[in-house]
Image (cartoon, rainbow, N blue to C red; front, side):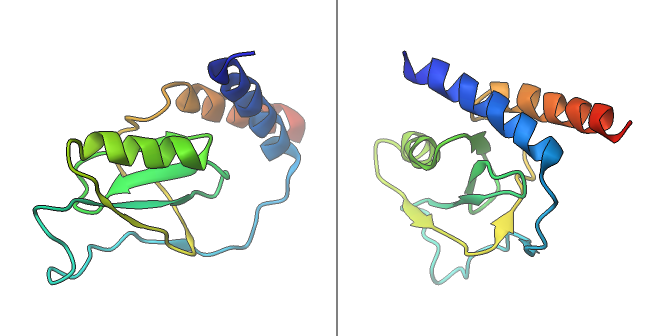
Length: 125
């Protein structure tokens, strides 16, 4: 079984579980820019964390690019690829946060979100 097949199966499972799960009362953080003294033009910074659906979010600190992922490792790899050839600083907020940019990560995530909303609507009937 390939990694892609595992990700696809896991996304389908997340979509089904989300329809039956009670929403968490965890706070959703607003991604705020880092202090200019901390942020460097030479070393890009990425926020890596989870959103309210439990997916991993990778978002560049200046808001230039971001993506949604099933696995933490995929989010970290995305951040490292976007900052290549240099490495990047990773910030792991404790609160959940949402991607407020176009998803440049796993393209199937948006399909899983649509499926989750459909299943939730059908379950509510």
